[in-house]
Image (cartoon, rainbow, N blue to C red; front, side, top):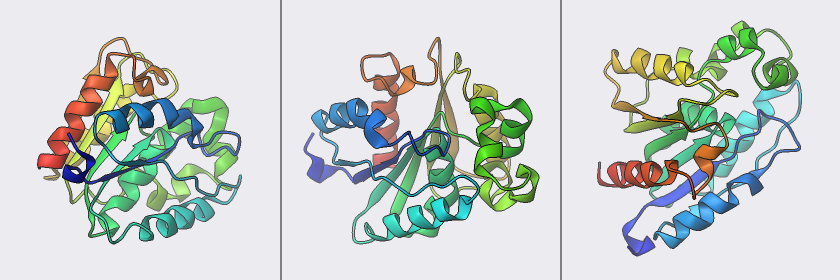
Length: 208
């Protein structure tokens, strides 16, 4: 299918907010999506330990650059967190696909996920940042699909399941796609069983 028939797909990278992880880990996925007819952008954004709002404002600024385009906003891991937090703020974003997203900062902190990444990123306890925590934020106002592997040890799928259910009961148009025997990084591997699920989710969001 020609990319002219699809919205622009903007995917925010993960890396648990650490500087050493950038959009390069999305390159195989992005290239495979382009071969399937999607126009894909994987922008870099600013990060600094102890300054979470630098990241939030950086991503807002990036998204403003796409305001003339219809967008599906995607995000992987920590990038999924920002996609869930920010998509409803932009009228040109028609849908969200969150891939193994960070959805609960308090639980992430309690579990020490990502080698205590939450404590590195936030200057205080996660409980003090409800505005950065998707599970405590307003429900998505646009169609949203969360995709997560049941073998994910870095971001447990149960956190996504809890997030989706909490928003669904409030009336959000949100769905969880669970993928069997897929871990955190396998889910963005275009040679894995996750890739057809991602393509199906994108098609559903495009047509929503």
